[in-house]
Length: 160
Image 1: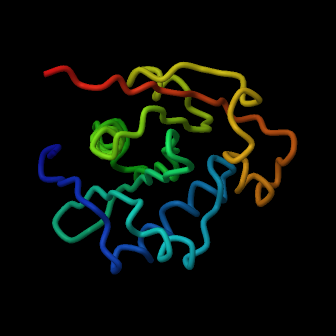
Image 2: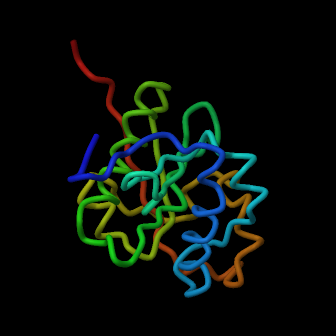
């Protein structure tokens, strides 16, 4: 999975500080939920990164919520690298892993629904999602008046 000289790979422990800075840059602008560095370390196996050489320029997480549900979260692409397909490649990596794990449904909460709709996600009422997905919402300054858009994607099993 490559886009020019950028490679998509699973995150390594040494990537956490850069990912933290990248995610919280957008969180400070109110565009996503902030992540403490400790949480990134604890969930490092959830993350994929886009690396240009040794430099992390984007990240995303696939977080399993239950046996039939996972969330795509913390998608952050360095501003100078946006509109180059890195976000799509990172989400595609999450889709591949979700299929390998046999997770039938993915969801995300976002301010950029059109991006996810291009990947096949469809908008749903956030109230239709299980309460478990709101586990992090209490940390958001907008809770309980969420203004993000909820989207889901059903992953059909690949035929032989």
